[in-house]
Length: 80
Image (cartoon, rainbow, N blue to C red; front, side, top):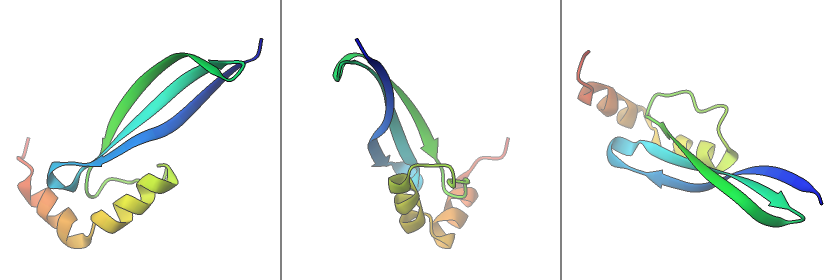
């Protein structure tokens, strides 16, 4: 019986204000068959540092988060 834990980016969505929502699936496999799985989501907003993200997420951020989009996003934020 061999157990293996894998994490994959299984969904990337561009949502309102060009925020990018990333879903990561963590799966536990026993002999190649998934026996457990869970999900975690996080958002990459325009202007956020995305250097530690998956390559697919980086590519989408680079295309979507232009200087104009970042400026518009920051202007739309309500001050705390």
